[in-house]
Length: 134
Image (tube, rainbow, N blue to C red; front, side, top):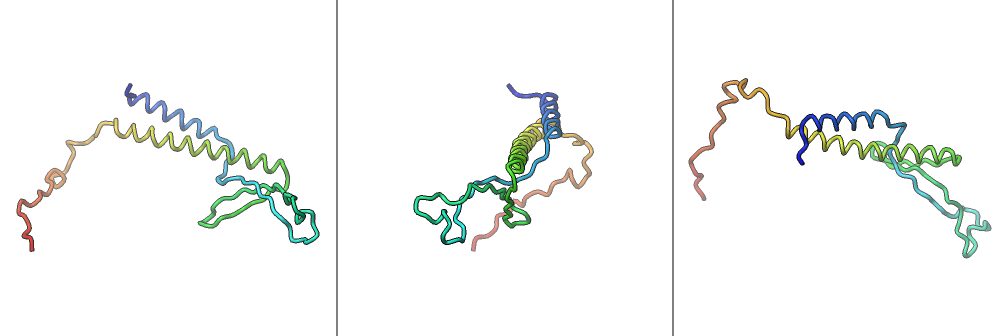
């Protein structure tokens, strides 16, 4: 069933309310890194050892450059995970908002047709002459 203009405007208001209720958020992704250190006689260099880690990092783009941030505690990691999850909610709500607004724009009637100026009313006509092929 096609949605009416008042329904779409109500949907838009609901989406905007949900965006307003979002908590702190930041973009990026959290990844887990394991690796070996530079000490030759460390256990991480022994065969069958997995290495140090997992170490978690938040990676994001800032002015076109990749920036990584490490976490000094599990609490800082959980905080960053909540913030990244909120950003994903923001992205989904933003996409929904754009879709609803596009539907509203298509349904909203055109206003001011009778207020066109004389030059706007007279559109230039295409020439009826054909160009000569060379």
